Length: 355
Image (cartoon, helix red, strand yellow):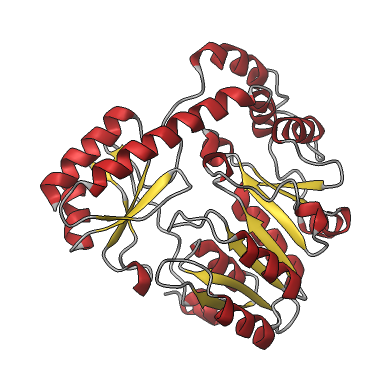
């Protein structure tokens, strides 16, 4: 490394590796929890008209007013809650972390969970505390109570459904965490469209909790749009940290139009939930495969040798996520995104040959 860079960059950043995003050209891509369906054909021409009307020569609407209205109407955001928007939920996490990064402050989350919670804590100079989940990937409340008492975290992130395990955490556990936390609790509902439960209708009842979502899993990953809903005082403070014009004009135009046709996106999510059921059953029928329950648009499963299986799938042009080395509790696991019927069939056939 350039010695000047090594001398100037923080040591904890030097120790990090960049978030890996492998090339997927020529592969059946089942590694990134994307919606495999394109935007509905019947609406594409109208979408293009909205994008064409965007003023590329001007800065975008800094408040993203039309987009906020579309989000409220589509998702039924309660009037008591305000919104702050981000370039994907990653930016929302970074905004929260940066705002809470007092000297010595701690960000607490659970492990295994979304890796960006820990990475962004490091980016922003927060201490990080990870509480291990139980063997069946549930929140260990005894360990959580002790961790909250010890670290007094400024912010707690709870992904529900959890990534990469796919399960919902107990509502009672989440409510207890909110009640015993002196800091902010962020409920990350990135996979809300595939889940049977949400905190949206009750988040306003908690003075120290906010709700985070993204439209990426709904089929709009390319637009990079995340949102945070919470009490106005929280949102006012986080909005100070948000960079101006962070939601570009094409994202605003495209997402506003798409959310005005929200039912079409939810129809695709419903199809994926049905496909998840079929794929889970097909995986469970394979010898040596353990399938974990999922309320998301992906499935975590365990094999005898995840590296060998991953490499075999890769040789067959099937790209899944190798989670087996990311955490000891995930040993010999892989995560597969729910694809189209033909993609799922190709994956199962390749997996059958690989194990």
